[in-house]
Amino acid sequence: HFGIVRFPQKKNIVFQELNYQYSFSDWIQWSMKIDSDQKTKEEYDKKIILFPEKKQIRQVDEPWFDMLLHKATIIGGEGRLGRNNVIFTLSLAYYSSGYALETCEYNMIEFNERLHEPLSSAELSKIVRSAYSGNYEAASREFIVELCQEWVAPELKNKDLFIQRKGWWKFKKPREQRKYSHKKEWKEDLVAYLSEKSYISKPYLTLSKKDLASELGMPKRTLDKVLKELKEEHKVFYKVTRGRNGGMVIASVKALFGTIIQVRKEMQQAYVAAITEKFGLTGSFVLNTFKQLAAPYKQPEEVRLFTVDTG
Image 1 (cartoon, rainbow, N blue to C red):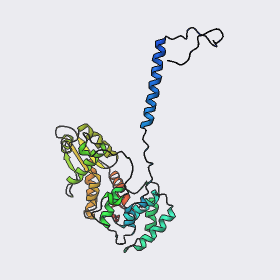
Image 2 (cartoon, rainbow, N blue to C red):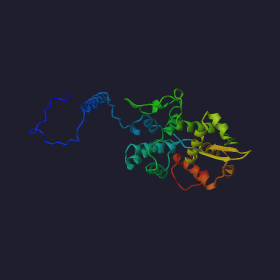
Image 3 (tube, rainbow, N blue to C red):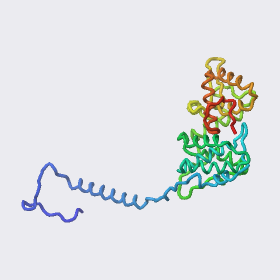
Image 4 (spheres, helix red, strand yellow):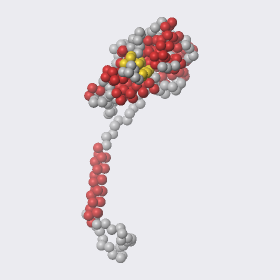
């Protein structure tokens, strides 16, 4: 049914083209399709769900910020996350929250004065300006958790430190409930495994790719992709030797760096030399990689790597 139709006559015909003719069944099919499309659109419109607007959460408004800002007992020291790291992290929070550099400096000066062992004004200024250099986006959650557990309370968890988002949000299923793991999770597994198996006397592993994949329960093809990305991110060093007696030597860069800063200074240069030989790298590349790793812990300055106060 197409409504009221007038029988064509010479008086009511405005345009005529005999090639533009369709059978009645064609019109029926067209009408049914239009009707179906209209119903589908109406049903879709009814099913649209409006999610709450995502509210911006500033780092300065989160619980961890006040916990660290009002802690006066934070000190520095070699090989630990200390006052330099706290000032840098607080400054990044101000930066990511949109505060001006001058505002951050003023508040960090007040924070520094409350410390039992304050930094010099020049050193404080370098840390703040490093946070505002544009090389960083915001304070790292990983460092925030470590700092709060070190200086506030060791039992603190993410839920105690960060604002939990409210509303309808899509969360991925727990890993144990999924058939497949994400690449990021595999990368974390590999780095954690290397760190667990490394020792000061031997901070690297020697094994085959097949054995490593078996240890991690990871598909070999996935392992190849993970190794390539971690190497590009300067998170692992590895070298593969082919042949009958070949294999792979691999180590976590963070574990290597942790080993170096723990040994006596007279042994550090020998460690770097051993690493360059073991992985077929240049000494300058290894040192630059370690300096990049140390960057979040201390403001950039021209110093020798092994004389840096990481506190």
